[in-house]
Structure formats: structure tokens, C-alpha cells
Length: 118
Image (cartoon, rainbow, N blue to C red; front, side):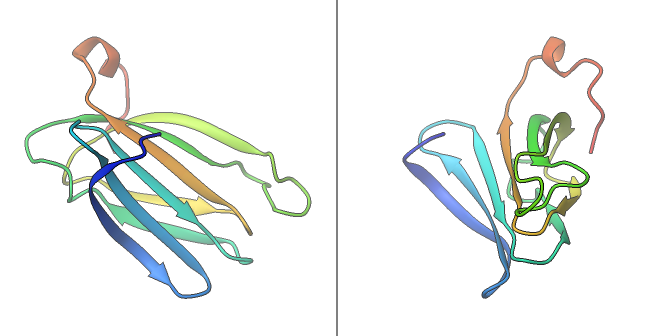
């Protein structure tokens, strides 16, 4: 995870309930998205319009697994990879007290092979 950022975007937020932020690593074409939820489960709906047009990226999504809960299953998570671009949209479930992180990087054709487009 980078420590310095070229830019940051607030993608969604509700004070006292949840926040989702995207940040571009300083001097690189790598992005990171982080979302933290409140006590209630919810579906986060974000888009990737901040990404440069005309490129596909590999998004590695670290998210709450089905059945995750901050009291009963705080370590239940999934990891998946998808292809995204500046027109992609994501509906991501967030467990009570949970959240998700996404690492977005440029990948080679070989690394992108077989990944589902979001």
C-alpha cells in the first residue's frame, strides 16, 4: 500500500455509516479503493470513472465473505480478480462492521487472460 498519493476521490459516504475512497499512488498508475461500513450490512455501488480512458486494469478485490460479521465471523473474506476500465461499475456487498479493499493495476495481456470484465 502506498503512503503518498497523487489524488484522492470520495466515491460514496454517509456520515457515521460508511465511506469509500479511491486514491492514485504518487508517480505510478496504480489505484487503491477502500471502503469501511457501519453496523448494518449494505451494498456499495461504485464506478471507476476516475480511471484513465482506453485502458483495462486488473482489480484485485478483498471483500467480506458470505456470512461475515464483525461479532461472529470477522475473518471471513474472499479475494477475486476482475478486469475494470473507466466505464465499469461494481456492486459490492459489505458485512456489518466490514468493508473491502481493491488494488487496481495495469496488467499484461497474459495476466488479464480469463478474467471477467466488470
